[in-house]
Length: 126
Image (cartoon, rainbow, N blue to C red; front, side, top):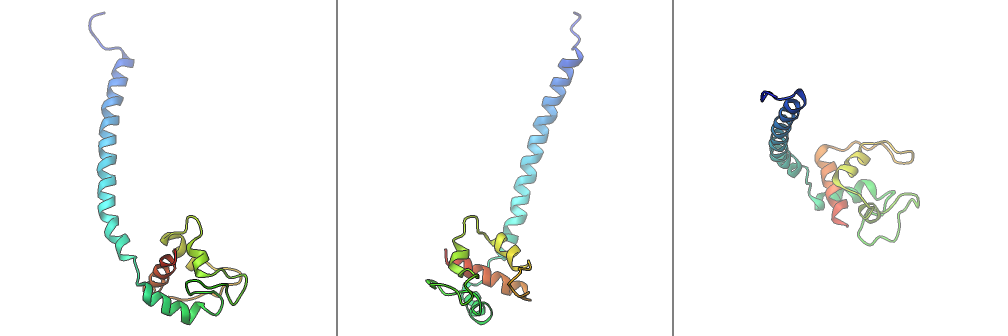
């Protein structure tokens, strides 16, 4: 052969070069996204003391909201401690749950800070 690259060799070399560049770009985007999202995540942390007060005022009609509660006033409603200890329970999961209608749960209208505070309180019961 006269030293020319075959089409397959050219494609493999070209693909390796692009995949390396793509990996580098992906790493950069991931790093930047983490930098941008970290402050946003930190802003979602509420005040568990305010959340406990709100839970006692709004949620205790149905849920056992205090740490160590033996049960809830409405037996079908889990205690906040049970909710907190549910495998996979996270801030995101609680946020979704508090914004989703449930058959037996009234549609609560809470401000964003109130939601964050209740979530912080529930997660403090883990």
